[in-house]
Image (tube, rainbow, N blue to C red; front, side):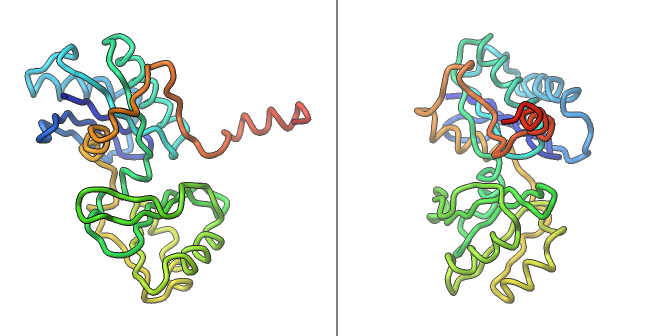
Length: 235
């Protein structure tokens, strides 16, 4: 099965094509430009370099959030549109799990983290089963960082905790203060999402694939504009 993978859920833009046995090609950039302008061109160039047509694809996997509201919408909308036009299934993958996949093989807690402002973070905790899979030990959520670090200290006992993600740098001092020498930090090259991981996870979850119109972004919270509108309606 040949699968196209897409991630625009945060600053990184990454696309990849893989089959069951190998990664065929990948393009990743962290230039922080407009994903809406560059995504489809990036997909087209990658397919052209691989001498593939869109009709050669069997499925699409996409990072469905959490992350940037705009970024998540761009990736999910593109994946749904392509899947619908090609008549192929699409599967959504957690943006947090994609980053956590960089740490397959680590012994201890694996904690991807995206800043959500106002002292909050998008996060989850995983455990690696060798280099084959990740198991969720604390489900993804939006939470105050202080509350999260307390929960981690109680749940991941006597083991190191590896933090991944570009936004970890914003909270490094607080993490060290709370977890002391149990805190570990990934090298910068391991902080970015890679579409090849989305393709790898998507291959294993193809049975969970949906018809294009059934896939929705996973924001973990309402957009600020939506929350304000509901507040005005007394809801």
